[in-house]
Length: 305
Image (tube, rainbow, N blue to C red; front, top):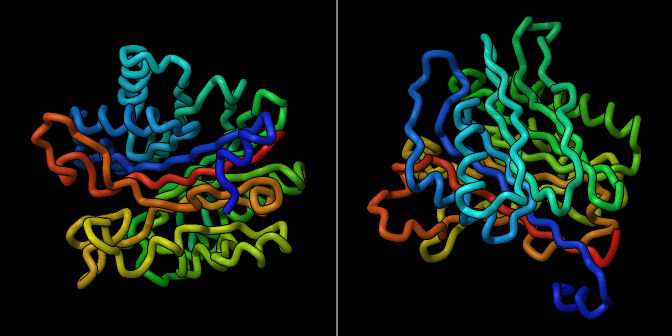
């Protein structure tokens, strides 16, 4: 694998670190239990940004948490990061915000969401929301954020889970029709794992980089690499609630997917990882006091835009 040092030797290069975290502050359901902001939440956000993350997607946040994040970034000398409020309330809550590096992106604009009411079942499908960011070079980057309904709402393998993926795919197709070569990154807590039909057949995502490289409408999903046996102290998944999966204790519900563009023009330094080593300093908090999800992170580089 080509290293960051290789690109430095060539001259100007671009580095892109993306992270996603379900921080569990405000579940997107009216009347659901709300959690207090902890030192652990603050430490996790600041640590991810200190590690050079350029785009951090968060879910299970409310508007009050967006205000808190703006103040947090100011207090910790992270003013180069901006917060894009993507929260919307009502009967069906979108619980997102996006933190982005304003030294790398000049603008961030919310786009029309991918949420739809399914014509066959009359069921509301919370497929996700989209934003458009712009690199300083002027190149557009489209970002989707998803927090699909739980398995208590739509059971594993149900047709509604597949339709969630298809609804997200429909919005992707609209973007690709307008901007065929534009890069797209999908962040999500899908409540499904990389091998489920909703991801593979609904969105159109594959673990096979060469397959995706030759088929520009597919997405590359590096989080297949987080499945299976985890050595040492590595977590069994990104979702580590005790009830996640009987017998395993975890599930890879949190994933970052990349359009074929990134397999043409970028090199993955870290394709997909679960971040379970956030230091809590002197805090006595356990991770379970902070969230039942770990952040996930991907790291890419290219020599020029």
